[in-house]
Length: 279
Image (cartoon, rainbow, N blue to C red; front, side, top):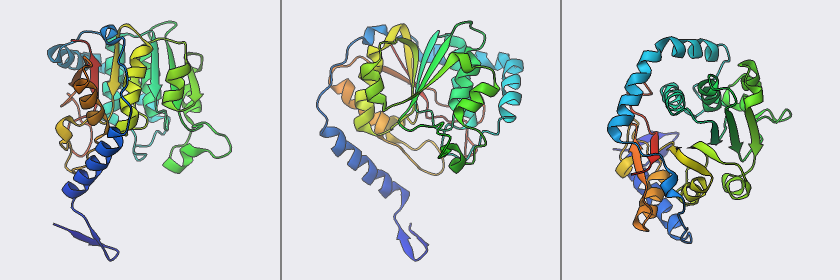
């Protein structure tokens, strides 16, 4: 079924999904084959263990209530096309449970996920977070956060929660940073450029900076390119990238978080978060 808007005929969502996926596949096909090293560093975790971990996080209701109160005072908007409140709780739960000492976030945006990672690291003295974005998300002149309805820059948010000493902001492309850094991490959150061509190169690069027993978290992972929410929207990049890496022999196990124990968006509990772990 088609709709009319401003005199223009809109294409059905299913057709748009197909066209977008086709374009992503064509672009991905032009990428030179990458080498996947260090996959053995990935933490071994089963789907059952992941489900149990998320269920167990409900027992931290008092701690989550504290984080909710703190972040509510920061005025983090839910209308910036970023990580939704339910996903923020999942991210907090994962980092709290896995207890990484060094975390890398690709894609700072307005700092919503950055704040929740930092809050999860708080109980660990000396734990650190590096958050990378291709744009200067803290630019005092352009103030990009304002265009998304946020009141404060990501750096100001981190300062407000008292975690400035533990968080470092980097302005660079994900691939440039991953190629040049000498740092190593226990947990990597890939939430930057979601194109298949970029994720195809990001994943092996993230593996190279991963400490033994580490994990990689993907955002916007749609298994079999199936819609997760009523709006029918699908971002094909992460799924297509993982499928090509697997076809080329990469031993990657991807565990979609699926339905969470709490609400996410559009009246559901579904999330597009997925954990990359060892077999």
